Length: 179
Image: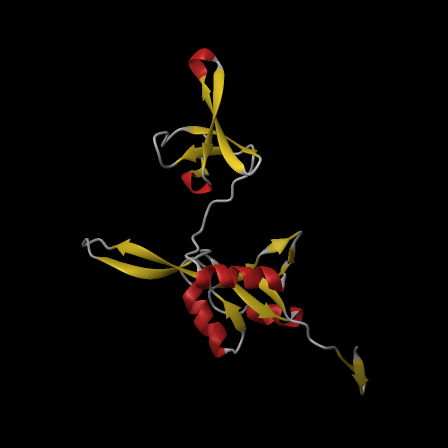
């Protein structure tokens, strides 16, 4: 309920999660700035093995979603947040920043902290995909879904026939469009 004191309207602030877009490789720096501003944020990280030019290998924490960090703010704080160095804007829908439900951020936080979450390409039925492991590695086909499993339809051009093979979600990636 809004209250009014001497012509000023005071509204209770409701906080919502938003996905904040950052410059490449600036996620951790932006997180440090948000921390110093006492802004609630969430930067999901994944541990990766990195090989340097000299051949040395080390484990590094990289953002699970490159160029994104999640912030919990009121809609009145959005403009101020855009002035933070390294921030490019908000993830938008129809030209407006899109709030993310609390339960989705809670699920993401749980998955990234308690499980080994890894970024996986978003693919849908009908998309061209490439098989990345197993005996059919390198084959490109169309993704279909049959009951609760995934299948890739591979076309044999020479005989104008197709075959569907069962694959796991981790065995495929989006195929680049051929021009």
